[in-house]
Length: 355
Image 1 (cartoon, helix red, strand yellow):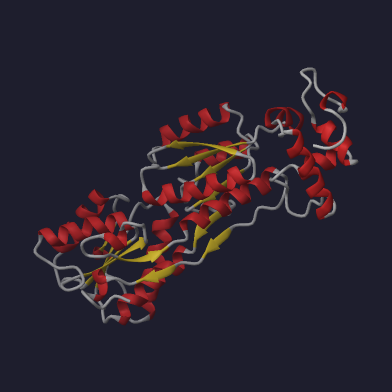
Image 2: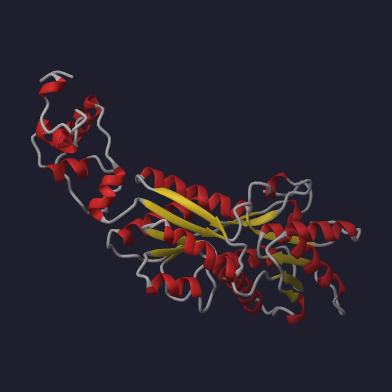
């Protein structure tokens, strides 16, 4: 860089390296201005100065080879630039896609994330929360919240740790979710338009808002159309392929008139239902319509492509991390419900008819 030789630079540290004060002095600004200009995680509404000032500060820092010491910054601000993430299981396509969004936004804002699997088990959740808090994380993203009283949320509130829920909601706590009630209605409207009147639901876990909201939206749409659901054909299940297998078997074994369609509240359960139907000699999209939820990347690549309600999973993750950082900075945390969409494939409309 032009200007003074490195040995003549102001405010070098004991090892002769440039400091934030060095950058500020050469840019002719206060150190706080230089710090804000070099931060990529400014709360919205915080002004640094003109774009030229910011560019000048960043250019000088680059020429000096200066980078912010996040650990030292944490000592000054009492923050660690670490965020914890609790998920039921990271092997789940849905949670993996959401976490990618969380981590992408975190890195963009100079944060690092620690993710822990809880397997939706209360004891394991408490243990993993303690592990994350021991790392002095600045906040927590919860991907495994329970609809009513949640001990993990109660602990975070008691310790005054900022948190945001993602995918699932709970009471009035800040959350970023898909509008699952609207998504359930989309699935119902699709089956109704195809002429289905007696349908079954693979209803998921009853402690998860995702399951409850999707079933409620689906049931309301069928009731409004004059075809209320039969309670015996609403079967709770695990959020996995094995759960879908068992629930579909129970539906097929239910006495009385057989349904013509099945709504599964997630794609893994729907895939399990497809396997059960195949084993029973039935064809999805022909003998029985099947629609899932989330539209994971695998859904359209199955031997018989699966119709599904698409959740904006990656966006859910980025929005959740952005909301958490706003809360860490002392800003407002307003919940968001993102819009779902319908993807129709052969499992409901039959071979060659998907659009």
